[in-house]
Image (cartoon, rainbow, N blue to C red):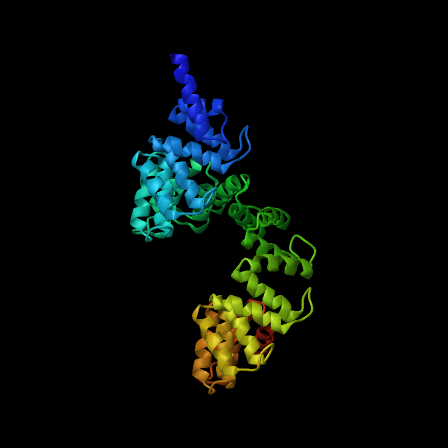
Length: 442
């Protein structure tokens, strides 16, 4: 009798699931939910079998239907990413909620991410914090790091760098590279603790050796500028290259700058352009500005004002202050576009309002000379002073001229000499020349 029942069950399973052998179907029928989940993971990862998301999903669905939280989470993740199924955030949320209700930490964390990013649900930082908090309390490193980020930037509540540091440390202690990199950022900026470039480098390196692209770029920046480590352009280049090879746009731009300036590498404008192009193609605004200047000056490529204008327009549209200034210059001089003083003034003003000293100086120059605006020495002085306060030497020299000649202000030789001296200290040749003249009684 027992033998007959077994044969009948096997035959029924053979008819129900043609792709699976009768023996495999029968043993799947006898597997526990945990064993079904493990079998699903083998097919999901391709461990010992060919990777097959469809088969993995079958196993996960069997286990999830019986209440296995890990399988429910995996199904949610597959729908969230579109792995073997059409991407469906609503179904992802449904499975994540089932798993999260059972305390499955990864599901709680990913549900938090859905609320943080507004995927399949209205964006809700409070709900995101709640999901991350539940998972973080269970020691789930990714949730600890994501919760720390929300505290660091005040998402869903008041900014709290002390709590951010606390959660980053928990995640970093588990070896999570993202948290280690963020620890480096906090030490570098002095957020939640005293600024400490050496500690920042230690954390960046922990993440960088794990292949974390942002940390590799950050460590390269520290070596390039001698922050927390001895300045070493060769090491900076090595770390930038590791990061850039992973497609990290900031590192690609930084490599371009090194080749343009000849730091740690022979100066090579063609290579600089190549790296800028890689980063600019990803929408990295600094690279778009740098590429515009490369084409404007014809470095490593034939001079092409039309292409320069194109790239500067892209960067300026994102509010990049140097690009706004450079684009203004092109309209002011009629390079790649019809000369347009009013457009130039507007762009300079937008750049200057963002605190860009070069644009502030250029606006001062326009008002001093009455170019595209009515001549106004008071406004010229106002813009020169803003730029000079940031240490911009040409503006300091221009202020010296205004005081020396009494343009828009009472003549003041002492003030003129002071500004010429500051300009000279900052490397401006005209400032040095006039400082020497005034120092000799001229």
